[in-house]
Figure 1 (tube, helix red, strand yellow):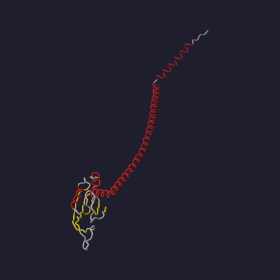
Figure 2: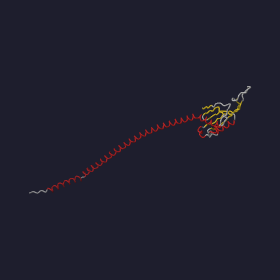
Figure 3: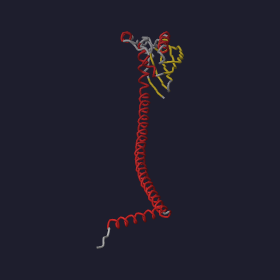
Figure 4: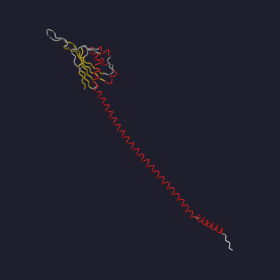
Length: 239
């Protein structure tokens, strides 16, 4: 009977295959091929990761660029609206200034007459004929039977806390017919009286009106003007 050892034959065959693989792997050509494959794999992985990361960075940069463009567009709209508001505010300010100047020019004659009324009430026997305002200059014409009354009136204008300044007074005495007296019985001329005609020129500053001294009620009630035969209606002119 023939005996065959199968275990030894299988082991020997397996050992021969391992030896063959080791020989193939251990050869320089095989090692070069394996190293080349490993390097190629790593290179492909690195290149692939670089491409993917670059693509992601590009997408993020484009997204941020779009956001910046949107912010710039919104900012441009806001700046345009701001310019429009500034233009409207400037136009409103110009209108307000124009209204103030108009009101100031309209209130000029009224303020002058009020200031004159207060000071004339303090000096009975003074009569105005005309008041002319040209810019900030005022010319006052009138008369009085007493020259001291004219001096007192000029002093009230001079000491007015800057409301009136650069005062100049010119006076001229003349005889006029007393129209209030009755004619003589036997005919002839009516009696005449001496009056002092005056012309006052002064500078007027409306902004000083608040600080100017006013007329107290007691003085106003006591200052009743007397009758003047040469009095004429007051005329106010503004140029």
